[in-house]
Length: 263
Picture 1 (cartoon, rainbow, N blue to C red):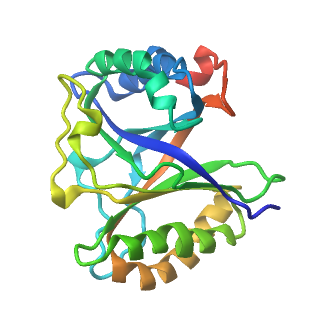
Picture 2: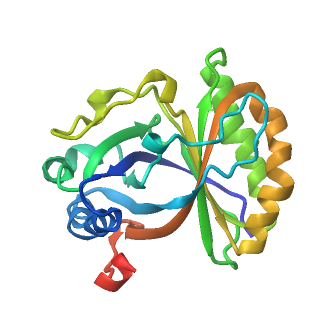
């Protein structure tokens, strides 16, 4: 077992599928030709798609003053996790980014990019001996009166360290975001509406070894975590990840079959 995390230069793009087509059709398109556009970008260390459940969400334990129900129009369909090899990688990938911009309208109705300072996201593989069987993602909204430094301490240090010791947790990826601005990802003919009241400020992806470990976490530990979260956080939005597709890993393009992409 290892407890050494690494810092990465990552961005997350939250995605909502077009509503004039079946949702699964859009998810398949995203995992197909659109994924190939992104994966071809030079300078990528890692590119994963997180396909979120349409039905299994809003399951974080409730607490007074904590929003856990996700509004239907704000329910995210998927996350594009893009991690760069170095600070110049975004410049090297400008050609593929332009192609992705043009293609977004074919599949998405809304896209919102979230990013932190370079090399501020944290990755941890808790156990090399146990594979990840299930993943969830948690989104956090900071209380208005809370300073960004205290919030970052909560997510990237206190909560991250606690989760790293949980039996059955196999991996963690956290991000604390810079203030959101439309200009960071202003693709044409796609919505980027993001009212201040709906802003998200951090995320943690949690991998579990099995369903038993996942269930124990939400029944036993998560309610206790709320005791500290409610002081700094106004919302926790939980989603189950139906499928993780990895198109680039350790800087190498992964060859996924059509069946792997769409099943």
